[in-house]
Structures are given as C-alpha cells and as structure tokens.
Image 1 (spheres, rainbow, N blue to C red):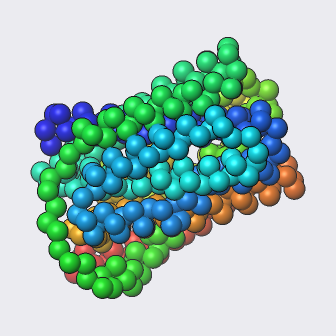
Image 2 (cartoon, one colour; image 1 turned 180 degrees about the horizontal axis):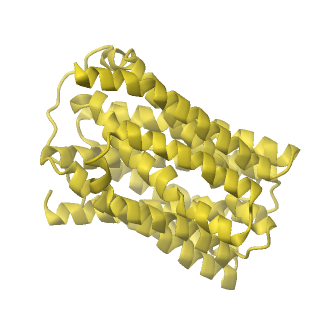
Length: 387
C-alpha cells in the first residue's frame, strides 16, 4: 500500500472515529440538555445500533454488486454531512428520532465498507498483520482528540456547541473520502445463495453469536457510561478524560497488534478478550472509585481493540473475494446492529427500573456468554488445522 493511500485511509479512520468520539460520550448529554428523559435518550441512542441491522448488509450487497466500495463511501459521506445540518432546525422529539435514524442509516455504510476496502488493499500486498493496526490506530487517535477537545469546550462554553463540532467533522470526512483508493476489484455476476453457503458453517454462526454478545455488553458503555460518571460527580472534561484513556489503551494495542496476531490464533485472542470483558464490567458495576475506573478503562484495549483486530482477521477465513464487503457488513449487522440495539434497550430498561450499576452487571454476563460461544468454535478449528 502506497504512503499516500495509507495517509488517506488513516485520515478516514481519524475523522470517522472523531465523529464517534463526539456522539458516544456527548450525544446523551446533548439530548439531556434538550429536556428528554432517560428512556427517550436510550431510544435515540439506540438508533446508532438499529440502523446497523439493515444498513450495513444493504450497503455491502450494493458494494459487492457494483465492485466499487469507494464511490459508495464518498456518496454516503457527503450525504451524511448534508443531513447532519438539519440538526439546527429540529425541535420535537419525533424530529430528532427521524433525524437520528436517517443520519446513522447513511453513516452505517462507512465503517464496513472502509474496513473491507482497507483489508482488501492490505491482503493484496500481504501486509495485514503489519499495517492494519497502524492504520486503525488513527481512528483511536481521532476519538481521543475529539473527546478531549469537546469535553474541554463543552465544560467552558456549554453542550450547545455539539452541532458545530458535528458539522465540521462530517464535512471534513466527506472531503477526505475523495482521496481514498483501493486496488481494482474484478466485477463478476453475483451467485445466488453464495452467502448462505458460508452461513451454513457452524463455526461462522458461533463466531457471529460471540460478536453479538460482545457488542450487547458494550452498548451499556456507549449509551450510559457518561451518565453513570455524571451521576458519580464527574464533570464533562473529566468524563472526556475517562473516554480518552480507554481509547489511548486501544492505540497501544493497535500499534503492537502484529506481535499479538502473529503469535496467537485469533480464536485465542477473542477468548481472552471476553474474559477481560467480564472483569472490566464487574469492576465498573461494583467498585466505581476513580482508581478502579481507570483500570477498567485501560481494559478497553482487550475488550475492544483486541476483539476488533482478531474478529477482522478471522472474518477473512470465511468471507473472501467477492464476499468481503458482505462479510464485514454481516458482522456489523449482527453485532453492532442486533447486539447493540438490544443491549442499549435492555440497558435503558435496567437503568430506569433498578440501580444504574445493574446495567454493567448485565454487560459482564453478556461477555461471559460471548466466551462460551467462541469456545464452541475453537475445538473444530484446531481439529481442522491438524487434519
């Protein structure tokens, strides 16, 4: 991959996750400032996940059919920037609901298609283990930069500046999308049922189920962690620091990713990630003091970065060539779509009906279920490798 192409994809990841770094910690606080209730906020934030149920697989199918992922990324990035501008004209809860749904249906295309384009380019020159983490860490850096800058800005000037930052980031993302490039894909007629053949593999189903439970677990974090910290007495800048710390831990893992994935099978990395998840969410639930919360945030390197890298590599075992975009999209649909939606809604119900800490107890249990699912895959894979 040429340096200019690496720069383009690095910038793409940086800006996309800068937007995530704005939405995940601060959208719930923005909606709270608009006077919405906790359950209304949970429903609005669930749009981030609900739109990933249908969006990614539809965009992925279109990308594989047209054999042109980059053009779709450019179209969606530009359209998202235009749609975000509508935030200045919204007043009612229903208007915000529709806006969140439309905006994130469009944005749901960017990460699966961007990931599959990056993976395609890296596997083309046999540099996935070496280069992927170094590119993907720019997303983590973008997230850190946004949560710190936005946290300080909101603390000084107020959360009403949220729309301004969103517009700046999405317009920048649209501009950067025009510098993306990937090796030419061979266009071929799509074969009916080819995706179903892969899905009949039980290993694939256990893998997808583990992803479902892992993102189900993290939904509580994405929707309610900022509110949880706010209830504990932390201000907006301090909340931003907690988020930045977790993503800084991501950066460290992504930088050294090649050393981990070249020595360990991705199944082993996933199993370790789920174990770390159980511990992390239990600590957040039962020991919410600053020192322990700091340790729990550092564990994000295991529960997100290690999981994401290993899952992305493992996907290539089953979804290759013309199935690549749909494989990434299917993972996004099952995990971030279904898992994230149900996790967010269950977390919202628990938050309202019981103690806030029970939201994170639920997350710890979900990580345990993810570990049980991936354990079903490992013996089959080891056996096949021996044969």
